[in-house]
Length: 350
Image (cartoon, rainbow, N blue to C red; front, side):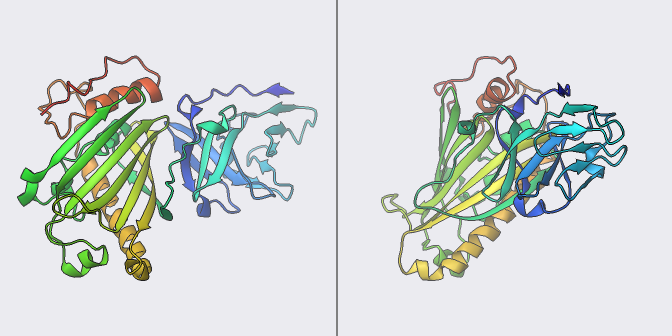
């Protein structure tokens, strides 16, 4: 059986979350990753199956087809049948067959993930943390290139302007302390600031008191593109951590040159037995806050500058200089393109 010639996607060397599991039922779904279209469906055993969108016969859109009772994808044009293993057959000339390039799939953490068929299982990005409960997952659409989305998730200078519940207020910018750490495979950010004053009823749910400090410690990785952000609070002396914290992990999935999907996973931890009695309220509040703040990021990202690529004309501060090492590591590790020297920690100064 001949192999249908279909170019693999370079970025699908790594697993990417592309569709919520609950969205993939009996019908065929279409997704786009980095300008390439794919179809997804479930076979008779409920396992997700993924192929490039073009039928190997004459390139018809497989997304317009249907799934027969044998669990095969049937092309709407000439009724070629493709089974879950990627074997395609002509109904008119049964001895005409080929093997379609199928993708590897995972159904995990509430999303369907896809990668090239030869992608090792150990490349799957494990991001769940011990002691934290997985409480939510959702998808957000950024009308912006992936490098602009990356910039948004790699700096905190926009927090007081764009966000409502995280970061400092405009009156407390003088309390902001932000440090970065740049490594060969990942970057880190460490934010400490006086927390903005929120309504007492909301702060009390999280055990936050007036004068407390807000912290956001994150690590961003590039195989694939994703960052995990631990949000927590301490007392004004920064010696005692408050009982509630949550981790937001955001995967950046390029759709095309001007759009990016942000697939978000939320974890929460409660260390106080009394606050655990408020767990349903805390979970709902954390979910709503996270969804609102990512929505705010998506709304402002479309106004961000895309060029110049190297940022040579930008007047960066120590609060956003991390974006240039991030861009260069993305080019090197994710897209496998030539890149200029990544800035060291010493070069990212106040």
